[in-house]
Length: 117
Image 1 (tube, rainbow, N blue to C red):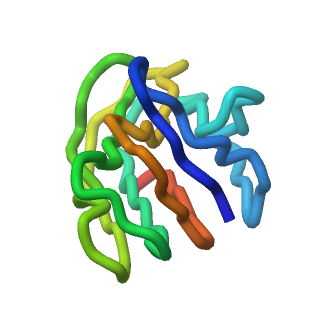
Image 2: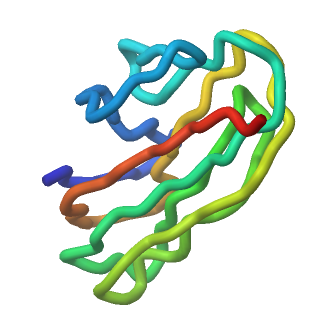
């Protein structure tokens, strides 16, 4: 469970608990995954939204490059994002909570970064 409260600066989600880590990525201590080889990658993020926020959302970034939204936090259910993206070595993939979010709660969230080919 992650409690979210964002009043100004967007906050990266602390996605640091590994489930499966392959040789092409490593975990960033600030949250997210760092790509260790350039190439095409599947990036997928899924989280359960337990408490809604009408004004906030979750966005996926490769360093400062915006990749897309994982959906607004305005409905109970799942926040989802999936895209195939060309990444370069050292890119940091993060999910960022953007507000304002007065109060939001996410259940289990999973960020997947898998090299294709």
